[in-house]
Length: 392
Image (cartoon, rainbow, N blue to C red; front, side, top):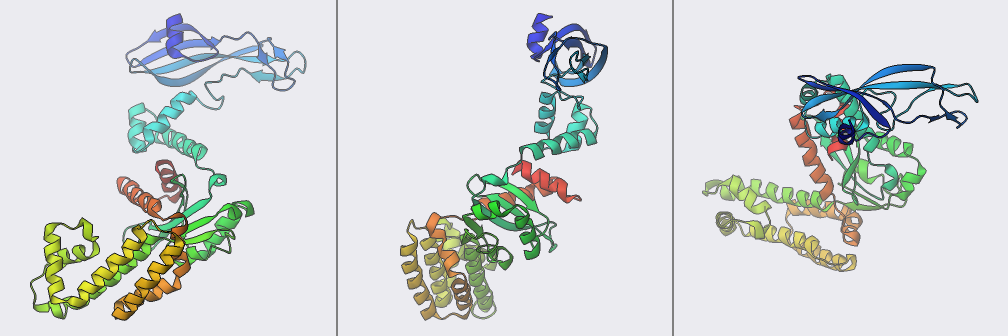
């Protein structure tokens, strides 16, 4: 019995008997402490007027389900005359599973379907789901830790315009919450509900140029520096260049043999990442349109500024020089981007203070897409939210 007690490794019990069947290891056990502390008056108690048996599931032994038949005592305090049940550190009195087995169930659910785990452990779907959700809530990131906040939206369903919102602690790199809406009123209500202390502790807010997000800086977050995410406005510049390419496809490129799909990727990728084939396609297009060539290298120069390890003061000079060059070029498509740049100039330049971006948030968005794909979509938002909080 002593060897089994060592193998079982549960504090405060002694093994009375063991029965092994084809599928189970049944261990009959009882408390090893003679006395218990009264929860009311804190005196020691040894009087036991009643016994009852608890059936508790534990981790498998030898590949078999382990069932603890735990004889539990009811004590009566001779000082305050109150009754209380014997407690064990390895199992909550409300549950029929040890804490370590509940944790095992939770870990099995990470990255896996709950139905599969339920079948594997011969448990109901509801039991496994309840364990998983309670463990996620217990281990979720606390808002008190957040100082630098990244915020972005993602589509609830592919092809639909219903957007949810993901919040990321940029210092830790973890999702702290998922909101079912991204409207300005909803966001204001949510963040004010977290309290004034939380709102005041945010020092950096990184987001795209949607006003529902940018409007939070200085109002809801009075101490937050707004950083417009570099990848979003770089994407805007790429889109502008691609729009110009489409215009040329209908005019200059109309009678020229150019693979437009490959040309698109050759123009949008950084020059250092191009294959030999893509370089040939790009250069062939440049021979037809000098304007496209100038536009492309203006785009590349803009990106190189943000890839340089320079201060905000140096960035102001470089971007001012770039703007002058772009204005001289006077391309109507690029001029639209210049308008965007001027509208968000300070927020874009704030990137150079701490080089904060939403790159981490974009990575989490990709993980969220994978979670939704694996689940074939979610009908219940809260279940999706908890799954994202756990895996991201």
